[in-house]
Image (cartoon, rainbow, N blue to C red; front, side, top):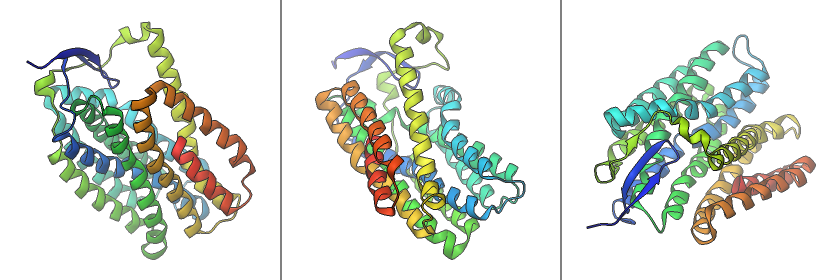
Length: 333
């Protein structure tokens, strides 16, 4: 009989008797699938920074301003966390696959809608709300799967899956700049919709959780967590960490365009270098977390990210310096 132990998942899953993970097997297929989902959710969200630079320069939508475009970028990053409790409830009632397929349909429809937007309110509904909620369904439906398959190498497996964000961000940041120039912004977004829809559909069918063996209880909201000081500290750390990360991810390319007067291709490269840093950093951080402790590594890299920002970004006066900072902050943010 396999050993069991209690555990509580950060997404709100309470697992009173968790069967120890098998440390691999089909779990590696799940790592690849989650990697690809991250590339086609958070990776595409990261590439919005290239579109943000284009929107700020050309302002093509009726009633728009730079503030609107920046707010849309922030909203599409925040919505996945807002909708996470709903997605968790859907998983509990109907299963992981229903949640993922709903995300695929909504994501594809939202991106297609954004590609035809002619007024700023339409971009709010499609890019900020629709795309953000779709990413929430896909993120919540996948982020608990890899830990179910691993124990000793859990942080490494999670780190490898998380590098999908960087890989997708690098690929689509470079492609977005080229597609906007050669195809126009509408077809650039529609191309992303087709790619994301196809890849996420296949991954949704390949992914397999271990809920039958683990028998977790999915809780929409657990108020008892707010009575635990350690949870409140973790919540505060996560809040401010994400606040800083989102500002950096969305504003570095626009900084290069507006302050350093970089052209469209250079802006795309800046966004891609942030993503390259994520590829390097997330896998390394996952490995080190298994060796040195998750909180030790998380606190150290967060401190270093702040140092890089104060020391390098505030003194970035050239394209080369911004490239160097982009790689550093991508690795540590």
